[in-house]
Image 1 (cartoon, rainbow, N blue to C red):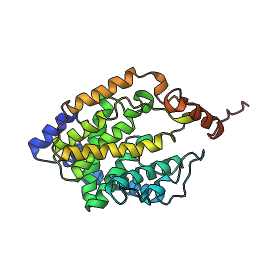
Image 2 (image 1 turned 30 degrees about the vertical axis):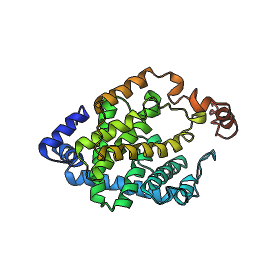
Image 3 (image 1 turned 180 degrees about the horizontal axis):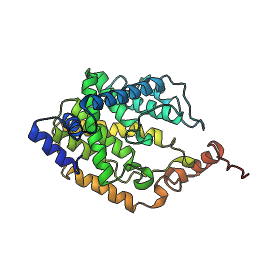
Length: 294
């Protein structure tokens, strides 16, 4: 659709459109789907995201290993200093989706299952506190789609290829741009939010304990949501990140390619290689037994 994010911003500015509206019109113009089919697909994705958040916030789900589960409900019921704010709503929702994922429930991979909590966490948290409609949310999801598509082409969305910066980091960038769209910011502000957010996740390793995307992956979705909210807040305040957003994305890709293999979803480094990480992997995680040959 677009080879760079600045190309999308310029097209939106020339046509006086939001990024989300531009994305929907561009995809419809390419003839693969009608506008109604595109919006219908995004509505179904939104419904699944909302359902995953609601399910996760019940608090009774646990992963097979027992390492994660129930924390989303704890955060939602917290009496901490930020209780009742969009911040805690977004973080709790991000955790909820990832707890559903860890319990083998239904989620939307946005952009991947490992980073699936960030986008719904941020968007549903913002929509709840700012009374945004589903139509607004659909355009925000379309904005996230443009960002994710460009990141996939210029860098990577795979933790195995580029570390967690490519999964949770990309998800946070998508959520930041979509959040700006949802709150009425300009396309250029959305791109500054993406740049600010993704620069904060550069170098983030992928180090799942025992090779299962539970710890620290689930919690990183909540911190990714926090990064996205910071990017949204700064961009809407008029802060402009000095490095162009596409160069931030390219840098993420370069760091991923040069990252030691131990930090790319192999469980060979990072928190997975700590004494406690290794102990938990031995004691708590499921050991898959090879099938007997006949």
